Image (cartoon, rainbow, N blue to C red; front, side, top):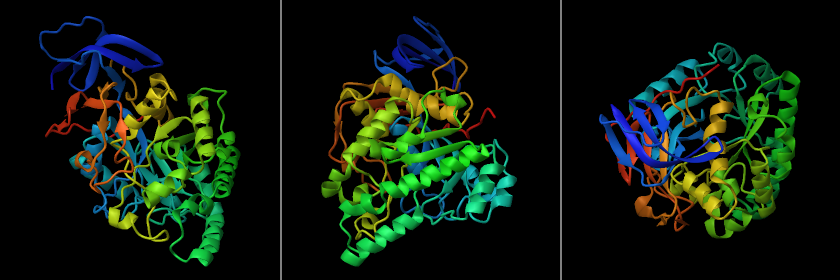
Length: 444
C-alpha cells in the first residue's frame, strides 16, 4: 500500500485534541508530528477536519450464516465503514449458532473473504456446550456471549449450574444479555390476555420491564463477584441498573463492566407512537428518565462502552403485529453521526465519544494495537467533517434491509474518509474495490 500522509488533521485521541500530520506506511501509523514531509507518500489534505481512531463496535448481528435475507457480513460491514466503524465483534445467534470451535473458525474464514471491517466473533455459551467452551483458546475470539434473556436465535441459557460453571471456567470476557425470562413471560401473558397478539407497542418497555432487567443483571453480577469472572453486561436500558457498576477504579482494573447502546441513548418510550415496532429492541427502549440516567452513568464512567447492537430485520418482518415483530434494528452506519449530534447538542465531548467507542472497547477486550492513534498501531482512522449537514434517506441507506430508524433525521456531521489498516476503504460516499480487513488479535 505504500505511504499515505494526512496533512492538517485535528486528532481526537487519549483525552486531547491536537493539530498534527499523520504518516501511514502500509498498515500502520508510522509517524505523528507537525509539518511531516515525505516525497514518497500520497498526500491527503484533510483540511482541518477531525481524525478519530476507527470505532470498535463490540456488539453487532450481521446475520450470516443462515439469516442473510436480513443482512450479511459484506453488506453490513460495508455500511459500518461508511459509519466510521472499522472493527466489530459479531454475535453467535446465527444459523447455525456459533457454539462450537468449528463453527467459530468457519465464521472467521467467511469474514476473511467478505468483510470490509476488522472482525472477531463471540463464542456462544449454551446449556450444553460447557466441554466445548473449555477447549476454547483465550486468543481465538473476542469473548464468550451468554443470552440470559431470549432473543433472535433462541440461545437462552437458563441452567443456573451451567451458568456458574461457565463463569468459573473461562478467563475470557463473558458478555451477557440480561433479562429475566420468567418475569417477561408473566408480563407478556397478562398483556396477551387483554390485547391478544396485537399488543400496543407502547407496552414493550413494561413487558420487558425494569424489573426483568435489574433482576437478571444484579443476579449475574453477584455470581461474577462470587466466582471472580470477568463479566460485561451488554446494552443497559434502565437507570436502576447503573447503580450496579463502579467508577472509582480505572477500566483496566474492573472485573465488572457495562455497555450502553445508541438507541437507548437516543430514543425513549415516547417515540413508540411515531416509530412503532421499528424501535422494538430487546432490552426495550424505556422512559426518558431511564435515558437521562444512562447518559449520567456514561459520563461519570459507570458505563464503559457505547455500542450499536446492530440487528437488521426486513421491513416486512418489523411491520408485523407486536408478538410477531422481531426485536432489533440496523444502526452501524448512523451510530457515530448520532453521537456527534449529541456532541453538537452539548451532551458529550468529542474526547469522551472516542474514549467510549474506541479506547475502552480495546482495553476491555485486550485488542492488540487498535483503538488509539499511536505510532506503531494499525492505521484504523476516521475523518469527520464536523459542520456538514445531511439527511438520512432511503437513497443513502446502505443496510441490506433497506431502512433505518433514523430516516428523515438530519445529522450535522459527516464521515468523509475511513481507513482500515492503512487502506482508504471509504471516501466521500465511494468504496474501494479492495478490502483490507483483518481478524483481530489480542494481548492476553
